[in-house]
Amino acid sequence: MSGDLDPHGDVTVDRVALAEELAGEAAGAGHAASADVAAYALGLGDDSLVLAQRLGDWITRAPELEEDVALGNIALDLLGHARSLLHYAGTHDGRSEDDLAYFRDEPDFRNAWLFEQPNGDFAHTIARQLVASTYLVELYRHLEASTDATLAAIAAKASKEVDYHRDHAIQWTLRLAGGTDESRRRMVRAVEQTWPYVEELFRDDAVVVRLADEGVVPLPSSLRDAFDSVIDQVFAEADLARPEGRTAFVVDGRGREGRHTEHLGPLLAEMQVLARAHPGASW
Amino acid sequence: MTAPAELSVASIDEHRDDEAQARFDDLIAKDSRIEPRDWMPDAYRKTLIRQISQHAHSEIIGMQPESNWISRAPSLKRKAILMAKVQDEAGHGLYLYSAAQTLGIGREEMMQQLIEGRARYSSIFNYTTPTWADMGAIGWLVDGAAICNQVPLCRASYGPYGRAMVRICKEESFHQRQGFEILLELMQGTDEQKRMAQDAVDRWYWPSLMMFGPPDDESPNSAQSMAWNIKRFSNDELRQRFVGMLVPQAEVLGVTLPDPNLTWNEERQAYDMSEIDWDEFHEVLAGRGPANAERLRRRREAHEDGAWVREAAAEYARKQAAKAATAA
Ligand SMILES: [Fe+2]
Ligand SMILES: [Fe+2]
Image 1 (cartoon, each protein chain N blue to C red):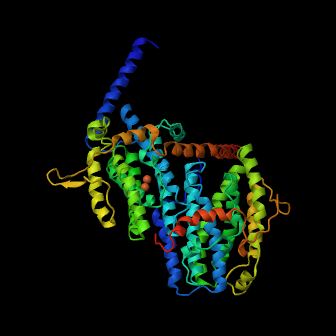
Image 2: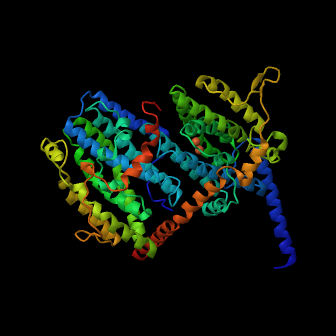
Image 3: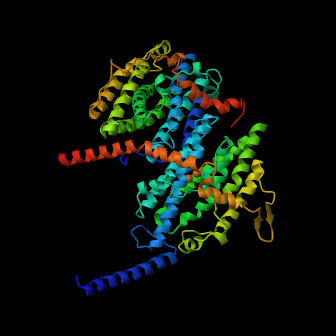
């Protein structure tokens, strides 16, 4: 089963070297991120880090072994993106990727709320993946043309990977929506409960407006049409409705300002516990 | 059909079997590979199914003790390496289930045997991982022992098994190096980190030696497996080889192997060591280890919780095939 899915090649621990090379390149480029670029990279890095942390929980618990591998692969890609982005953000004030990941408190995390939402059942994870990856595909595609060489390089590598993540999410959306009555019921519910978190991804704030003026980043709001059109195509094939304007509940995501849902705190507590028990230690 | 005809058919079959057996014996004698399309004795097939499926189960259950630390890995680099490692193990499980499937058993059947507690997997994974240093000790000792066991299996007479092992062994040696590096980093760190590393080595050393199985004089299946070129070295030979590899590495790390009687015996050209606690080995094997119940529970839950997803995928595939058929 799922033999038609791209297994995304073999994973080996070799792959983690890629993220390091990239981080090295960024450092080698010798320029420190400006305050605005650092703030932006931090938000995007936190999105990826928090989602990688969530997806990692599926490993050993996925519905089939192929999914242990696939979701683990996706988590590993996102973790790689997070490392590159946090590394770059840290060049602004001399903090390392680990300083940023392990020694910031919840209000200093800048991820959007979508990414910190719990895994739920497999349908919820797929709905979250569909939104996240469709958004990231559009974002990285534009970011590849950034006037900031480091962001452009990170985006060029990430672009190919999130493309695969989106394929994976689309395939499963179709399967679950078009599978059994139960899977369809679960997929419909997952879409309804995920959609309230979409809005925040496309909100422009002062930092991105300034950066967009300089051609460093695309305005989030400018990505919305492309996002909607991909989702509409997928939903048409899956016979699902986009719950726009009548979502199950309304949320006012303020992750970029450091305000979070109740779900982020426990995630960070778990992620940071060992590092914080040994401050200054090297691993 | 008349009786004589039946007889003659049976005798032709028997004749064919003799010829096939001779061909099989010849392939084994020449140390050639047996492939899925080749005739093979029933006992050979059964032995392989048992061994390969147990091996696959070990890879899958073996993901659990390490996945315990993915969420808490103390640096992002270590998190990435650990995640990739656990992924590798899932991949190993998949290759091995595929190899077993070429012998005529289905993955679902093997999975059922596992979650119903009717199949074995390596007992080592019934030990727990209370500290981060266990990630180092598992890589260094458990993957290390796995390599010693598995490198000879790359030459196993059954083709699909041998080829799966070649891919797997390459990755296992990365795992061992990563485990060694984790311990090395800890041993160069704070006093607390050093204590953590030594404690983990103390807990994993003996179980890792048990991974080679009972002593040669108590290993009833070994002789036949060696005759069939499935197994190449005896349990005790492999255990010696492993200890020989560990001793210099422990010196580099600065950890003490927890056996006061471990010394090189010039005369025997082998290490003398304390008696292994085989009672513990048999207890864990019998299901009374620290985490046997937990490991099976997790696997069963994942399988049962995922049933609706697998059914959905199967149903979707059926509908797509039906659509394609009407379109054609
Ligand atoms: Fe393995
Ligand atoms: Fe391994």
